[in-house]
Length: 344
Image (cartoon, rainbow, N blue to C red; front, side, top):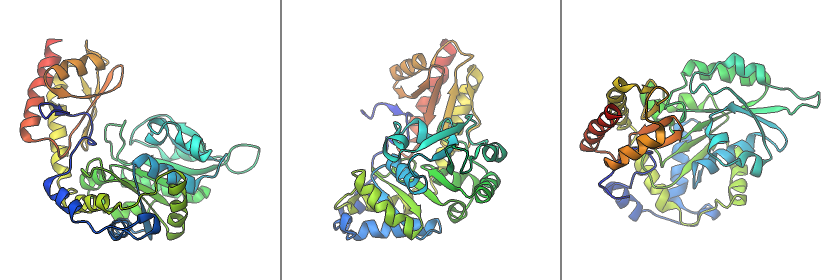
C-alpha cells in the first residue's frame, strides 16, 4: 500500500520498525518443529510467564492459535459458547466446526458488556441427548464491539460460572495488551482466570507474524500435535519470534498513544450524525444508521481523500489506530473525515 494513504483499516497493516528488523536479522535460530529454535523457545517461555501459565506455543496466526485452544478444550460433537460477534465464529471461516468438529452456540452480541447470568443459563450439562457445553470463549478486547474491554469483575464472575458448571474458559486475547494498558490490569491477573488464552503479536504490537497459545504444560504438549496437524509447524521461526520479543519489550506501553489518537478520531466525527461507540482502546466503530452516507460510500469518499477505513456492514465502518500512524497522519484524517461527513 503506498505511503500516501493514511491507513486506518486495521492494526495488522503495520510494518516492522528499524529496531525490530535489527532484532530479526540478529536472531539465533534452529528447527522449531524439533523444539530447537532458541528464539522461539525464549518467546514461548516469556509469554507463558507474563500470564502466569506453565507453557505457550508459537503459531503463525491468531485464528490458528484460537482453533488450537478450542480443540484442547472441546471434543468433536461437543459445544462452545461465545457471543454472536466473536472472532472465533465470525472471522475464522467455520474452523471450529471444520477442524475440531465443534458445535457452537452464541449469546446475543453485546461486545464487552457480557451478563454472566445469561451465559450461565445457556450451559447444557451431559445427558438428555443434548450437546454438552465444554467451554466458554470471550474476546478481550472485543473487535466488533468497538475495542471494548471486558471488566475484570465480569471475567471473575465468568470464571465462577465456568467452575460451577465444570466447563473451561478461553480468552481470545488478540488485543489483550490494549485491555492491560487501558484498565491497568496485570497480564498475570488476566492469565489466572483462563484455562487457555491466545495472544497476538501482529496487531497492536506491530510484529509481522505470530500469535501464541497459552496454557498448562500438558495442554501445550497436545497443542504442538494439533499445530502440526493444521500445517502450522515452522522451521527457523526464530526470525519471527525475535520480532515478537522486540514488540513485547518496546511496544506495549506505547499503546496508550493509539488509544488517545482513537479518542480524537471519535470526537471529530461525533458532531456529524455518526454514532461512535465509547472508545476505550484503539478501535472506533462508526454507526452510520442516521447518516446519509452508508459505510461503502464513506469508505470510497475517504479513500479519495487518501484515508483508508474498514467496512464492517452496510451501515457500520471502523477506524483503527496503530504504531504505523504519525501525528501528521492523524491530523490528515481529522481534517478529511469531518469534511466528508459534513458535505454528504
